[in-house]
Amino acid sequence: MCDRTQGQELVVTAQVPWNERPVEIARCGDCSSIVLSAVEPPSTYSVEAWEVYIEQLAGVDSIANTLAK
Image (cartoon, rainbow, N blue to C red):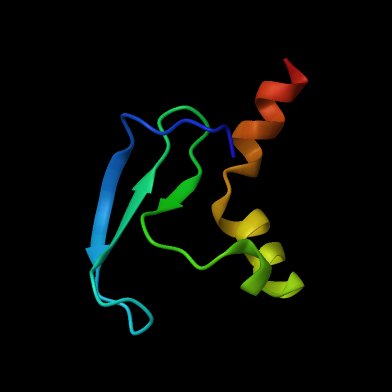
């Protein structure tokens, strides 16, 4: 969400059926968003998938608090 690419905190590594290599799941140290190391192109996700990401994973509270400041 904030474009940070370095210094993210690794949460877990998981094997997923859609990728041969394990996916690393991390949390951004700046905005608290969940970051995946291997994702599909944005055009492959449904509107519902984007809504779930925004509502549950994107760190919207942290982003809103930053914008409110």
